[in-house]
Structures are given as C-alpha cells and as structure tokens.
Amino acid sequence: MIPADAAGRIAAWAAELGFQESGIADTDLSATEAGLLQWLAAGCHGAMDYMARHGLKRARPAELTPGTLRIISVRMNYWPPDATAADAVLADPELGYVSRYALGRDYHKVLRNRLQQLIDRMRAAFGDYAFRAFSDSAPVLEVALAEKAGLGWRGKHTLLLDRAAGSYFFLGEIYTDLPLPATSATSAHCGTCSRCIEACPTGAIVAPYRVDARLCISYLTIEHPGSIPEALRPALGNRIYGCDDCQLVCPWNQYAHASAEPDFAARNGLDGARLADLFAWSAEEFDARLAGSAIRRIGHERWLRNIAVALGNAPATAAVTAALRARAADASPLVREHVAWALARHDR
Image 1 (cartoon, rainbow, N blue to C red):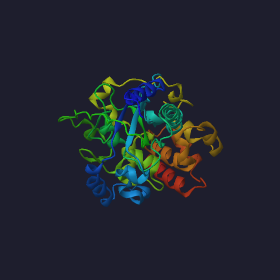
Image 2: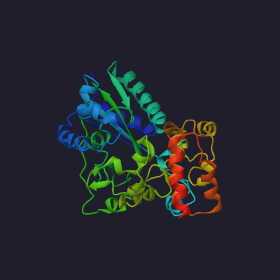
Image 3: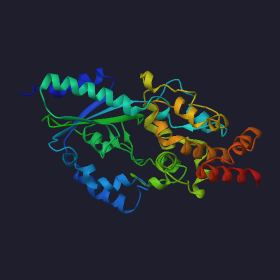
Image 4: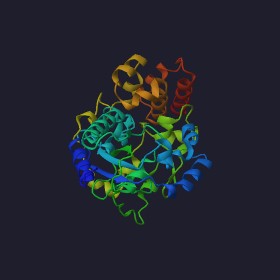
C-alpha cells in the first residue's frame, strides 16, 4: 500500500535534495500534440532532427516509458549569485556573453544525480516501482509537464514562469508507475506583456508561445552545426553561447532567486571574459578548461565559430583584429569562413 502522505514525503525529500519546487502531473498531454506537429511541420526545429524523429512520443509519456502513470516534475534555481552582471557584459562588445545557466557545472549531471537520490528514497519507502529520471535528456515536454504539475505557466517566450521565482531554473522529471495524486496546475500571468517578444535580438519569438529555433541565438550558437546565416550574425552581438535576453527583460524575474548550489558558480572567468582571450584557447585548453561544463559538448570548432562572429561585431581594436588574423588560416573551413567575415567587417 502506498502511504496517504506519499506525495508530501516526496515533496519534502525533493526540497532536502536542493529542488526549490516539485509537483506531480498525469500523462495526458494531448492538448499539446497539434501545436507540436505544426511546429515541426513548419521546420521550426531547424537541424535538430531528433525533434522530428521522436515526433509525438514527446507528448505521450507512456510511449517513451511504458507503464508510466505519473511524472514527478522538479525545478532547481541556477542563477549564479556572484557572476558579473549580465547587462554589463552585454554592454561591452569586447567581452563574451555566456548564458548564465552554462557558467558552472553541466546541469545535466547535477540534476540527474539529485533525481537518482530522490528515486532511491522513493524505492526504499514505497517498494520496487518503476522510476526513470530525465533532465533535458530525452523526448520529454518538460515545460508542459511542469505546467501540469503546478510549477508555473508557459510564458510567451515558451519558458516556464513562476510568480515567486521567475524563470531562472532547470527542470527535471521522474517517470513512474507509482499511482500518486496529481498536483493542481496554476494560472498564467503574462497578461498583455510582450517584453520578451520585443527584446529578442533576432525576432525568434515569432508569435506568443512560439519560437522558431532557426532564428534563436541559443540554437544558432549551440545546436546549429554549420555556418551561422550571415544576415543573423550582427544580431548575435557578443553572445557566444546561448542568450538570456527574453528572460532578462521579463518582469517576473525581479522575483528570481540566486542559486545556492556551488556547482552553478561561474568557472574560468566565463561570466565576463575577453573575446580575444577566449579565441586564443587551443583545442586542448578548451577541453581542459571546460571539463564538466555543458559548453564542452559543442566542441572547439563551434566555440571558435561563435567567438569569430562576436569579434566581427566588436570594435576594430588592435587586440580584436590581431586575434582574428591569428586564426585566418585555421584548419577548420567553418572557422576560416567566420573569421574572414569578421575581418571583412573591420576592413570596410
């Protein structure tokens, strides 16, 4: 028999493990299926072929993990408290802006470890039920599930929002056949606000609650494998890994809480490093300095590609042009192309 207070015990354990909020959702995501199919049909997933490959499995948890009855959804704050102010970095074109979520340790590892600890506690207390943990690691509609579980609502920028915590948090899920009571969903509170839409540098939020990944700076600097479209390069500014603009302007983030997790503290000075210095990293330095970081998975070549674009958008100082010329004959055709574009902008 499952104890009547099982849901409360799970919430208490989640809090002890460092999750700021948790909730329980059922598996019915049928209301999201039409929108997901339309988004895929429009090609808004860009080169993320896995999005189309998994199709509606994202909206059908029991197809991903047979037997699933409930999803335990959790969130964990990531904003690094001592990092250089985001606005200050964005305002200095000779610095490289890294999305604040990626300044510390790879969140996949942190959340999966905590989720496994939560699973261990549930299994010890409730018996040998099935549990499977996810954190941005499988075809899971994380925001939709978190919304159903009462953790917040889907904002117009498509991220989860909470009135008391904003949006600077990671999400994680545990799929289970444990028949728990579902949590009530919350109401939405974006109202008529459109700041996130207006702030997007590339116009990637093409309509409220709809992002075209092909225009999104996070997609272009992280997921996109090839050449960044020339028309979009100037809009990237000094953003070399991800983009936070839609969150930075959101009124609800005035209530966001900084993370108390040491793992999410900024490493290697990435909260405000000079572009020229980052561009000088060898492949070996890139791997060594970014060991344990989410950034490492894009590889050294894309890292240089992104920084070359940012250097092309920076003032034509001696340090900037020298950094670019030092890689004008780089072994990578992708890097050479973006360096040539950057130098051409400075030679005009």
